[in-house]
Image: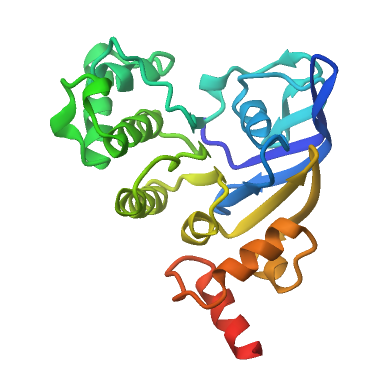
Length: 265
């Protein structure tokens, strides 16, 4: 299925009586690459897992195109039918499978013939520039190559939404810049909407146009990044604003914001 809109309605998630998310509501629409921001432990990864259908909320509803797909303690639509793919922070690659085998595993729920799945997997590897690594084991690859394997596995399912949970941690600057460019290109070519969790303002500048800021498991501000950065209410966005001002404007959505800030000064 091709998803066009996810919505949280008053979503809460508890773990052992501790709240990871409390009464959270927001919308993520196709064509609006969005970042989830906030300090460590504020519920960002939990929100991604709830969107993906890997967990159910304790209260509230998750909707896809207006239809409830998760409700209190129940996942009504499984992950492989949501039109989403997720790249985990630890990548979650299977060490005993080849690169090609890892991508094929991601296609297990796609109802493809064996030949069609292999063709889809090899296409995804080629898109991520690692077709020559198909027979290698993940443990023999560099960090950047492993990131590309995880990305290829996600892209292979042809998702409408790509959920990225701090996917660039541990990469050197050059590898990170290349991967950012590849994700931006892939998202445009394949019409995939990125939902990014990161702590780095430059990741946000490269990929995202909207932001949802969480603190203590609650949404404290949300909207278009350019508008939020004009008068940020959260300490995190004020820090992002200070980091972005004075830098060469990126080619992405924040370039105009950086230009406007200089004019105001």
